[in-house]
Image 1: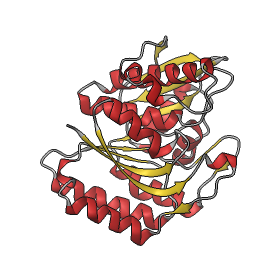
Image 2: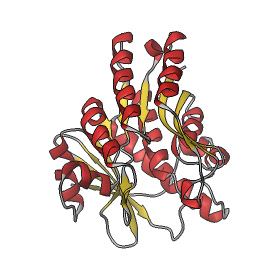
Image 3: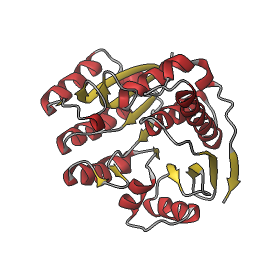
Image 4: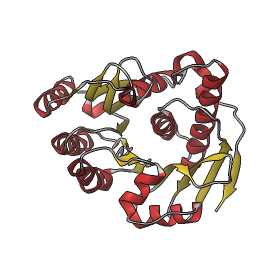
Length: 276
């Protein structure tokens, strides 16, 4: 069974962060190992008060995972939210040790969770700097939202073509959420060295938080399952559309990842696909 190491948040009652990703990965028959960077009871946008994992505990948890000889078995690493630059340094060191322990280096997906519109940066500047300088260079893929892409590239982005140019400026293959699309749509843009493909679907009035987390996990799952990056991105876009539509239909306050199960592994939601 494939193994995924997730370094991100754990939120007990919300389908966001690493807690959401472990359920999505399990639906793909990928064994998730979540090492939490912060622990919360509910979505922090609702006023939750939790606890960031102290760096020494974060380091010890990862050392325990390594002691069970799991580093050599990791197929996929997803990094997400970090509460301190010390955590980022620990994660960067662990990525090096995992690559050294494995005969087949894992796929590393860095989701640079730094901020979004309209608030902008919602981590400490030191954390954002550490993610940009230490984790992005180690990534096989990055999965920023549009605001994060602008932050990392230093570019003002007004179009899908501009987003593709900004991603190439960073120098990493990218899957960009909230890409610029036509009015009434929401887009996912995959950018490789020579190609860029836009997947757009209808924007719904109310979408629970966590779709970016779901997209990163679905995309990473596709890569280690052997899908091409474009096919993995297309499936992730369909899964995001399907889960948001279900949440609206069922009036669910959270993404119904577990209830949908197999539907997110083989989603059928309609997309508009455009080659840039």
